[in-house]
Structure formats: C-alpha cells, structure tokens
Image 1 (cartoon, chains in turn red, orange):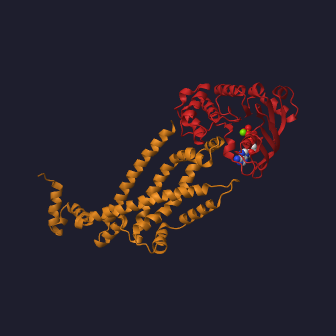
Image 2 (cartoon, chains in turn purple, orange; image 1 turned 30 degrees about the horizontal axis):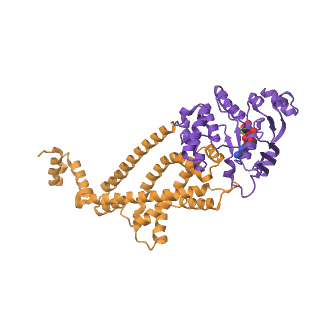
Length: 240
Length: 257
Ligand SMILES: Nc1ncnc2c1ncn2[C@@H]1O[C@H](COP(=O)(O)OP(=O)(O)OP(=O)(O)O)[C@@H](O)[C@H]1O
Ligand SMILES: [Mg+2]
C-alpha cells in the first residue's frame, strides 16, 4: 500500500533521514519505536508529505506521491493523521471539527457528514460532546475526537505520531482502546509510540529507528524476545 | 427663572474695569471665562472645532479601512512561500513596501502624496485618506502577519493532513483564530492613526489640530484652543481605549470555552 524508497530528508545541514526503505501492506499495523531524535516523526510526516522529502520516492496506492503534478490534497484525503497534541480546531465545535473536511471537500452532504460523525462519536462514547468546544475536553477525549475526525474521511491508512505521549497516565488507556478497536476493524496503521505493550499486542510488525534509518524490523514476538542490533538491545533494556 | 450665582458674579465682573477687577478675587475666573469665550463661543467658533473633529475622524476612519485592506493583502504576500519553503517574489515586494513606509516620516509621506503623486488631485481629504491608509497598511500588515503566525502550527498541519487546501485551511481554521489575536493591536493602530492625522494640516486640511492652531493665531490666545483640542483628542481616545479593553476581555473569555 505504501512503499518508501531511499527516503532522505534534511533540514538545512541537519540530515534527519538517510535512505529509508520500507514497504507497508494493506491491513498491517506497523509500530515504529526508537530513541528521541531518531527521525520517527519525520519519517511518518514524510508519508503524507507534511514534510517534503529531499530525496527518494514515496508510493501510495500505486502512485508516486512526491512526483510532479500530484494533487497532494487529493492524496492526503486517504491518509488520516493523529498528532501528539491532538490539534483539534479550537474555533470549531466537536461536530464542526469532524464534518469540516468531508463537507468542504464535497465528499458528503452536511446531513450525511453529521450522521457519520454521530455514528463515530458513539463508537468512542463521546456523542454527548458534539456541541462542545475542544477547550472544554480532557486530553483523552480530545485525542479520541481527533481519531474520529480522521476516520470521518474514511481513510485507507491511519498515521499516529505518539498519540498518547501528551496524555495524563489515566487517559492513555481510553485512547489505546480506541486504537485497538480500529486495528481489529482492519485499518492499515502506522503508529509511532513508546507504548511497548501496544506494540506487542496490536502490531503486526515493529520497526526500530535510530540515527535516521530503520535499524531492525520484526514481528512483535521476535522483536522483543530476540533483538539483534546492539543499539536495539540497549534501547529495549532502557524502555522495558 | 433660576439664578446661578457664580455666573452672575462672573458676568458682573466682566462689565467692570480692569482696575476694579484687580482688587477682587474673582479676577481669575473672569479671565478664564473671557478666554473660553474668545476661544470657543465668540463667532460660533465651537462649530469650527466640530468641523475639524469631523475631518480628523473621517480621515482616520477611511484611512483605517484602506489600511486594513492593504495590510491584510500585504501580510499574506509576506507569508507566501514556494513549495520548497523559500519566500516568493510577492514576499519581497511586501518587504520593500513595509521598509519604505517604516523608514520615512509620515509627514513626508503625506507631502509626497499631495504635491507629487496626486498633485493633480484637489481633494485633500481623499489624498489624506489614501496617504494614511498606505502608511497604516504597513503596520497593519505586521499585525496581521504576527496574528497568523501566533496560531499554532498544528492547526494548519491538521487541516492539511485532512486534505484541505492551503486556502481552505487559512479560511476556515487559521484566519478565524488569528482574528482574535489581531483585533486588540488593530485597535491600538487605529488610535495611533487618529493622532497621526494631526499632520494633515500640511496639505491644507482643516482638521482639529489645524483649526485650533488657526484660532489661536487669529485671537492671539494660544492656551484655550490648543488645550481644548488636546482635551477633545484625549477624551475620544480614552473612550476608544475603554472600548478596546472591554473587547479584549470578552475575547479572552471566549478563549476558555
Ligand atoms: N521542522 C524541523 N526543522 C528543523 N529540524 C527538525 C524539524 N523537525 C525535526 N527536526 C530535527 O530532526 C531530528 C529528528 O526529529 P524527529 O521529530 O523526527 O525525531 P523523533 O524520532 O520523532 O523524536 P521524538 O521521539 O523526540 O519525537 C531532530 O534532530 C530534530 O531536531
Ligand atoms: Mg516525534
């Protein structure tokens, strides 16, 4: 579904990604782990071109999306993204947060979008918050809404960048629960996280990034039981 | 008929001679009254102040509108970037404009507009409005730009990640939030503008300042006209400041919803 070839990204002099190659099949749940500054976020943000690669190719659904004459907005409709800091639109109610993109992009009528939104809100247990503003919600609630907002676009893949890192510990569970359900529904997911339990339980593959490249990739069981690279062993000894 | 003792006394003293007044404690009041009389009441001079105030407010108001239009456009020009993140030619033009306006005295800008650029136009008010509008636009541009940059980058990223275009993200998400950041400093800019218009006398416009100046030279009496004009400016600006503070408080409240 997504193929990354020789992906390089630098910010000025600072080379952050140095030739990443990776392939993601439909339905996979890829969990990306690694030390701070290793380029996990940048890698994820290159996938939907929030960061534009300096070199390399990103293929999505058989299309080279960082080529010329690609309609980026059209591509991004099919890739949902959930951010560490939620990024709900502060000026809009929860309902308007969810229906803004589907209606403005003329994918659904207002009524359809509202119906979809309510169904999704019920799924995460927040339908009573439809008319609230983001400022009045807890972190966990915000993040569940952010997931719903992405899902309302009916994406083919969902990208998560440390979705629980900004949450109070007691709220991590409710968000992971929603993500688990989403995984069970068959969604293709790429998740950057420090939640090793989630990686073990939900991931189909776990990827270790360090120094701007993928150092190791394996099934969760093998990844945690049988790490090969010394850097991964060191990393795991710190986080487990 | 009711009587106002103070007024009666003052009137009486105005009729008696200076020598007689000199021996009396009411001389000071009488003097003041006479000065006020000359500065504001004789020959209906208060009407001139009112007219002058009208000109001042008119120029400030229309200049503010022009300034907001220019400033908004210039702000977006300055923010425009190419795909690789480098500034566009429009950003360059915007920078030059802002530099020139900020780097020259506004009196000179008005004079240049009046005597050179619009030399053939005899409508002083129009030229003043344009001149101050162009001047204010540079400052408004910086205000608007700062207001937009103050909106969390995550808001834009979330919008773009959903497939909204840059324009849609601006229109539905960033601008409504920037609007709140921008209103208070825009109010301040208007206050500055209102005072700045005091120089339109240079292009023969009878604004409040010039009227006061003219009356003071015609009556050989500077104190009352000038202080009077200052008080009028002060009161208007005080009222604007209070309104602005109220607005700010309300905006802050709506932030916590
Ligand atoms: N927009 C940017 N401009 C300049 N440098 C950046 C930018 N974004 C990231 N970097 C740099 O790229 C490097 C990798 O950042 P990245 O956010 O991808 O790391 P990460 O693995 O997600 O780390 P963390 O776990 O802390 O989120 C860092 O050194 C960071 O300073
Ligand atoms: Mg990160």
